[in-house]
Image 1 (cartoon, rainbow, N blue to C red):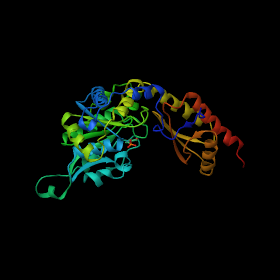
Image 2 (cartoon, rainbow, N blue to C red; image 1 turned 45 degrees about the vertical axis):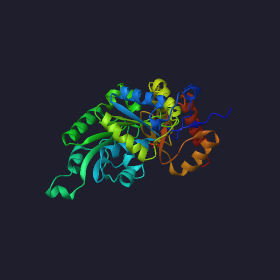
Image 3 (cartoon, protein in one colour; image 1 turned 180 degrees about the vertical axis):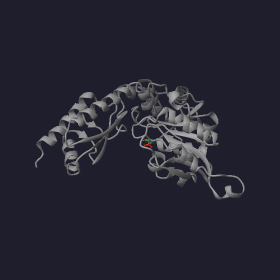
Image 4 (cartoon, rainbow, N blue to C red; image 1 turned 60 degrees about the horizontal axis):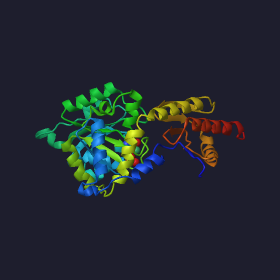
Length: 345
Ligand SMILES: *Cc1c(COP(=O)(O)O)cnc(C)c1O
């Protein structure tokens, strides 16, 4: 048996459980590019139903899912309004511009992830003959939930999406961790997705599948995204083996996200008891804390030697998930305490 490693770097690090692996092994598969993989079809209908949308599409990554969504909403030369710190804008290699010829219009995020509605309003360009010919056509508002672990306030979502709709814009949610948001708020997935035309959901984060994202929206929208998925190289063949992991996650790993949130609270509380550390916040499955700069490198190495993987930075982030337990939180906090108690000088 390999030593138990406590990995708090991200919720992307989870390994399939024996139950999930068994479900994958037993999957009925076909060729999804021919549209006849029954497990992929089952996953797509299950997600569409849970999210309260007409249709859904299985894609290899969240990055591709967001990109296919942007390309399905926007034509070449259209513009999307997005947060300066949004994953879609900042952490996806500029794919919308490179591959979609879509113009990003970033707006500075509030700390809770929202984009001020007056700034959205000011960013929408006139279109039509005359002056309108000067501008890219504003087509879409893209939001993110959760944002750095924080649940985007429901009231803000209602106001921003209805404002966008009134301006003729479509709305997309990067809901990589929307299940964390729904569980934290005690609402259904459908409720958490209701305000948006399209939502992208990651299965390889807290839900614990090895690979996969699902994009959901109207039938027309998903038909357009389906074509872009093929163009982007995301048409997979016997992908039912992967879809089976996602179906298993949908059934077994959604409600238990509450445990991850509880573990993050435990971790924040434990770190707050260490004098050298300033806990800056905790939201859903993430904890943010400041560490003394000179200790970052040696502490990270000290923890790694003890089977604890965490990125120790001046501004550090720790993420809980289904492969870490309440006692792992204690072990992590204990090791950090021990480091500070015994370090020289
Ligand atoms: C992880 C993540 C994605 C998608 O990332 P992939 O690694 O491509 O699956 C998108 N948005 C957010 C907010 C994420 O955290």
